[in-house]
Image 1 (cartoon, rainbow, N blue to C red):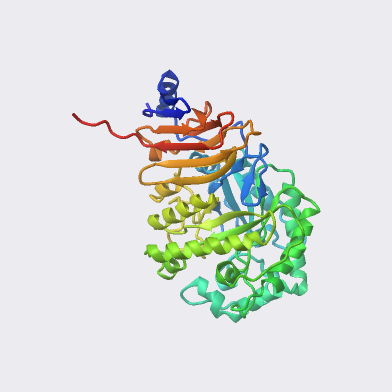
Image 2: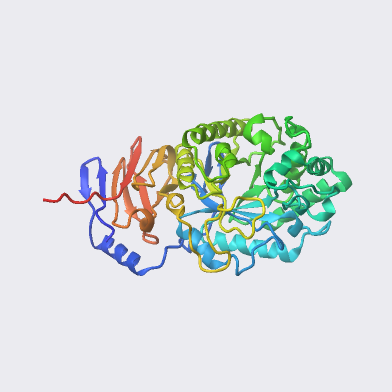
Length: 488
């Protein structure tokens, strides 16, 4: 049995142990890691300022991972990413994936996109969506093209000779003037390459218009501006892309969110302003990495420095997001290391902000532009073996809240979880809390609820369902690992 489970309501503490829970325990003992409810595929979500909301108006918190293959053919094969991967992601309780495509793979020649490439990409979207996982369609690039040791633009869209930094790919941004000029060629639409990028995105969006599994479109990963990188230039460079891409997508898809990323300097410290075409369905894509840990090669976590820097990065991103009325927000990259303490620290910060995240990354696939230990799965094609950092990534969290959350905290060392929210009296749908039973509650768990009642989902024992009592001004939920019985 999964231990003692209790509920606290207005009339005091009530024990809740019985044959139903014994049945749940039996199912858990005999079943493989749980997958998402197969009858509940991913539904369309919309940004609502600080929150993401589902069709019932519940606030949705997203936890998940990046799946990006950066080397040719720029898309994982069915052997490299298949049902077993999707099942394992769902079994972690995760409900989002940022699925990267590479421009060079999607549009290897000017004009129509590669139909076979887009078909394979769509297969992965639907594979994940059938398991309740919301997919962010991500046009991924790093340092533009293989000529500089990266990936992204096809060769036909590049007009410069690449010069790489000899030891560190990221330093190429700051040391290669030819790389800066290659981005500048794109921003000023040399030979129509920006127009081709817009056409590519329009074709992709047309394919996914109406697909409820899609969370939205991330227009370009970590854009760079020009050779004079120290100057804030987003409004003269990156903004040109958004001014063309957003209206083009809206001609074929008016429902899905469009995510924007500022340039790398603006996302971290320069804070240049961009103005967007009026659109009620925009969202900020943020990457939160501790600069101090990156400088140290992600082998040491300077705790106090990183807590200060991460807090500043979140405040910076929030102020950037607040410039666009009603815009949503998601941390689309963080982690990228085996520094468990740092991953946990950042996840704690995101919990306090009720801010969703997508860890970087699921598998490495010879990734040329990331650190050695970024991946969560050790083998690219064999059995799915998760690295030890999964302990802090697999977390209790409120996946859907029928109200407005005011507190959301989890302790990966003790399993203690707490959610406080103001219930929405007009919502008939329950609050859903994911509990990683095998990882954090192997001996069971205790539940205290004030202002509401709770039950275990009849479909998935990892899901706790909470319903507010009539007239309750606040609902408070606590989950704990059971305390050992005192010895005599």
